View 1 (tube, rainbow, N blue to C red):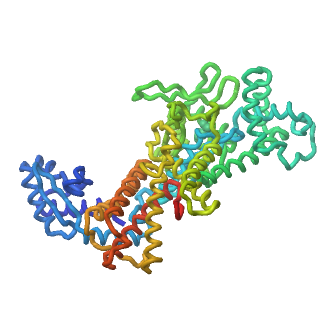
View 2: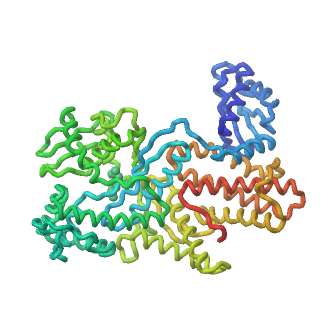
View 3: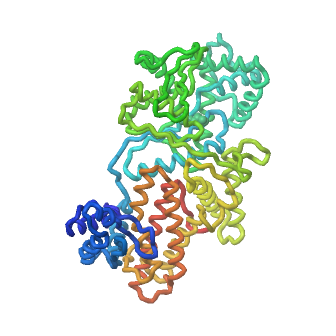
Length: 589
Ligand code: ARG
């Protein structure tokens, strides 16, 4: 389906051509003076230079052509040469009716239709999921939904961090705590137990304990290092333990992500890329890209146009160990082989930008990914506490995601509790949905690259630019529709749009007509915050309309039907939008 801006643009361009000017001057934009008009065209000003005429003369000539069209209720040419446009009610009704019937509410599909590997989540196995991983999951999930909605094929990969020193630390700590386990005996030839020798809570206690110990105890640190090395060489006992650690952790991670309404298509991990490392390094050497520097293997990636220093990318340390960039390059080899994507998109903390600059340059120079494949890093900022420092628990520790969700849900529940008419179970379900909207909208409504302050009170408020406010608006519409059916016996499905009779009604129509243009921009810029800004404006506009209009008390049935059809469409657009942001609305609140 065509977007409204294109449809208006096509008419204005035709009018320019009709008046004897190049059509391209008829470019239309949303008005920046909503008090004067809805859309505008400034093309006469540019055309004036090319045709050596006064801009107002050109504007008036074009105006004459536009006046004949049914699309506009009002067109005017104002000095120095602007064309101001207002859409006619009849045109809006026909356009909105088409949107309401189209399967994607007037959006997409984008022309690009790409295959995208989306790398998000990125938790580290055996370390508890903390708020730092929250943003990647929340933003990534939303981008996955947005790109899919617009027609891309998206493969969401959690890319588990399963291959680092944390494994060696856990193994050595376990060895000290439970030396009788068979895993540590090199001569053991029996079967290993099917049950893991720890629960997830034990595991989450073991890792920080071991990590702290390694900072004080050099011998232990060395042991953990060796254990990691032995694991990486797939020694059977260590490998069996690693499998236990993985299973227990992944099960817990899945539970946590489910609470966040975040899902992944594949659960690949850093270790999966390890077999690709030798070939990748070989290639780097053959292409003359990798060279030795003080015993390490590095690739120079700086470019002449760099304004800041980009240090060489290290592939192998002098002790033979591989590093984070080595794994990410090998992962790209793997992704090429498995998926041959058009784009690989990484949603990772912006402090890792240098790492990705190095990796992308290496990958392009070595031809690991073809030139036309887009490698894109979407770096996000830090979620801070009210003190402006990275968000922590009251005790100053790292806040676990589960705890955070629990606290927000409790805060919402307390609020819902104040004037509740629903039973206990519904109250908790409702609170869960509202809490998720608070958390996700609070995050997504900020431009991803910016830091933001996490403020439970502000995020859970039912008024203002918050998730709960958007939900409240949807719930309000649901309630009107229920009453329309129950008290008046109307059928919302059969309601038909009518031409607007007041300005808040028209404002709501204009905004709904823009959904396709908004989604187009959100998709191109990978900017969920712009979708948030749109639904906030849409909610405000709906609420003004609601306060000025007696929808249920309207006696003229046709007019009432028009109102109902309009709010049905508003509900559809709002519900689709929050689905793209990754949350949903309750029936009541
Ligand atoms: N596990 C990493 C971390 O916690 C994030 C992984 C991001 N993705 C990647 N391909 N490097 O920092």
